[in-house]
Length: 132
Image (cartoon, rainbow, N blue to C red; front, top):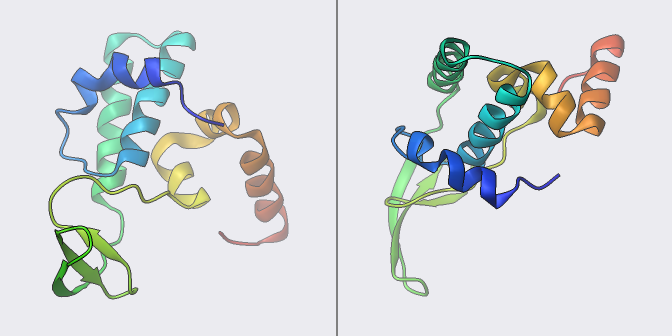
């Protein structure tokens, strides 16, 4: 399911002020806030939910930077990470989250709203003891 660009624009003044450079997370935070309002959450609950998401983000795992490189094709300076991927030093990244990361950050109710198929997969994994 793609997130509506109108929702992203609506919440941009709130989301863009956060110390997050991952576009995927920023888009989902916008969608989460919009969905929360449709569920009847008030301003205090939204603030609390945002703080919970920020804590979850802060507690995610880190990956080692193994080098700093200049991409001669794009003209961008990038970090090479220990998993072999490259990310720009400046600007945004667009790393998608795993199902478990989505669950930890946004909760099962949002995930069920956003992606019913993933929600079903997580429930099946839970029943059979699988992991993401």
